Image (cartoon, rainbow over the protein chains, first blue to last red):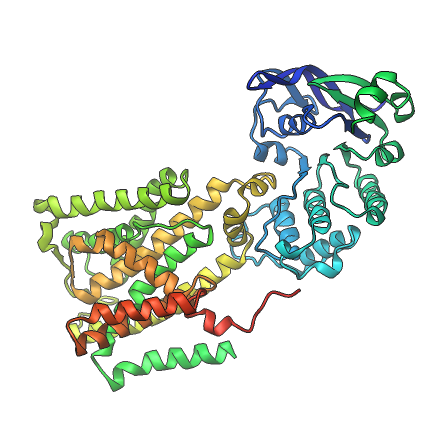
Amino acid sequence: MSASILQVRDLHVEFNGVKAADGVSLDINEGEFLAVIGPNGSGKTTLLNLCTGYVRPKSGSIHLDGRAITGLSPRVITRRGVARAFQIPQLFSDQSVLDNMMLALAAKDGLWTMLRPLALPARREEATALLDLVGLRDDKNRVSRTLPEGHRKLLDIAVALALKPRLLLLDEPTSGVSTLERFSLMEALMSALRTRNITALFVEHDMDVVARYADRVLVWNAGTVMAQGHPDEVFKDERVLKNVVGVA
Amino acid sequence: MRAILLIVAILAIVAAPMAAPWLQFVLTMAIAKGLAALGVAVLLRAGMISIGHAMSFAASAYGVAFLARGGISDFGVLLVLSVVVTGLAGAVVGAFLIRYRAIFFAMLNLAVSMVFYALFAKLYGLTGGTDGMTIPVPTVFGVVLSEPTFKAVLFYGSVALMLLVGLAVHRYLDSPLGHALSAVHTNEVRLEYLGVPVWAVLLVAYIVSAVLAGMGGAIAGFAIGRVVPDFAFWTASGHLVLVAVLGGIGGVPGAFIGAFFLELLHTEAAAFTDAWNLIVGAALIGVIMFLPKGLYGLLTRSEVPAK
């Protein structure tokens, strides 16, 4: 088995008495593509918020590559190699698609190059290649707020990839993407993850996508891990079929 | 096309005092206010309105007066030192103020600037109170000049400074740091998730804006030959915001276009009637209603976002 890249131990968090994580422990192994499934409101996005520092746990610990990241800010955790794509795309809506990408690449390179333009030729080329990867090359000069929802989602993922993360957290990457584009997006994403050696965790409601692409599935229900394992095993679990797959 | 317009505009500014000498002072003040308004426009990029930037404008002018009183007489040294001190003051004040957003940022800037105003007005023994402080005619590279000659040097020096600073600010806004500043306005969360320290982006912008306002204040002090507490009054801060919005924040020239327009309009209107505020106000309403991108928007109208 590959080494664990992210270790979550005995994590507790609650909002107004509702437990979003109730003593959760889990590992994400290097190179795997881990799917998190579960009913709406079960705390899946909270798990991403916890791992990226947006929400601080009441107790418990999170380690990245053996170093504690519990309670650190999203900025610091990002700089340690964790990138995130959001359920609702988080873009710079007044800027062009290309500028969104180049700003992400510049952030990775170090933003403090005050007198060098954002649009350096090498950076522009790299941004265009990433846009090509997710199928947005033709949209590169559009202002990002004018993109259809599915393309905004793709751009959000491309921005996260531009950070060259060790661990990528994706919140429902295929929601808002048309059925026709869904699998081509996943193929492109998987290719990018493999070629760049990126470990990924993705929250997903589309069970076809989960069954086809996930190396391992983690079933989240009411702030606890109900089951985990290979998709074939998990989707045979009666509790999962009854409580999650039926409502996911 | 815009490059040609820019060259024509610069030539017109440089030549104007030769045709009408009274324009020299008006244009020098327009450049001073344009620099300060550019500082306000830099912060407006991040969606942050400062109704207190007259404090940096005044602080620099007072800095020149204090340094001159302390025995420094060279124009360049006075200008650089006063702007550096204003930049440092901007770093201290900015470190506190950039934690706030929207109306809180605007009002806290206003509050701090009014504290400065009160100090300038009340510390009579130090600042001369409401009488202000005199700024003597400085030497230029050790050469003693008559007042008219110095004012001419100040004007042409200000034009050169406007061009150099304008170019530097353009480069800054076109850099990743400048784009990150605009990104603060649209999505601060994503910026944090890119690993970008938003506080640092804003602090740099605040210092840049304070330095720009400081340059403007120092030039205004030299041009008038006196600095008074009214330099820091809240209406002066409001005036800078007005100039920035009037000119348009879509590019560096906007602040200067707004400043030239307003100074010339003010001067012309005041020559015709005591109710010059009415004319200035009507012109402003017209610009704001029909030119949402400011006067600079007239030059950039054809540049619609690519679809």
